[in-house]
Image (cartoon, rainbow, N blue to C red):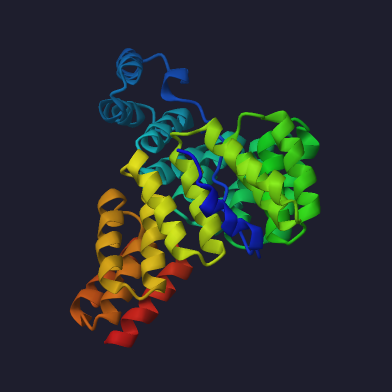
Length: 366
């Protein structure tokens, strides 16, 4: 999907305060259950073989059930618990994944892979403080773990700790000078800090390492435009669309950029283009809902956040935002119900900041 020139002209007056938030790039690295070395137990060995066959068939739900039986036979084997956690994460069940990784860590607390994977699951639950703590532990346990530094940088960026993110990405680059993910993410931090000339340099290095990554071209285009190089900046955005014409993430990032410049209508168009390609793209719906709240389109926001909750029932912020929309429409009972669901979800995820926010909103209505 090409980026229209009229839309790109918006970027010539950039006052970038931020850009699309980088997401964790690393796959879970903890062992899967089939790598477990079983005890001398025929039943356990049989269960692990059955589980392996189900994993190979892609039937993760049945595989999990089989491995849970195995865990009851060998409750001291952290690899079985980490394997269940891995499969839960593969299905998007991040809360369950967290619980099983915590069991694995309880049995083997110095396993850096378990700590990293816990951080990844926590990040997907948007529990960024807990994710950061897990990534830090992984980095301490494995001082050469590049992925842990990148993951840490991502969640620190989400918490607006830009200096901390900058340091984490620098450490990742020192460990692996060919990590385009680290250069790309470092460029994003520099954009956020307003250091556009340095961002251009860093992002050009990222583009050199990964010339076919559209996300790098998007960031590079932002930095170039803000540093005054309009023609190269627009060319970078066009290159991003050429590289991945059917990638909704490209439109998602363009939407984030337009939103950061207060071009809310243009941002909504970009997000809807992303949804056209991927109808269940939760992050696009979330962004549209937040813009609708900002524009005081409360009815639209309610509809959008209901869709978010349908796609991702564990997203506490969606319940909270829907509560805000109900409150603005004077639908008190609906608002109370939404805030209560937000509170329950935040508590289940160990998100204390979110829980306090939801509790305060409830107290205002009671």
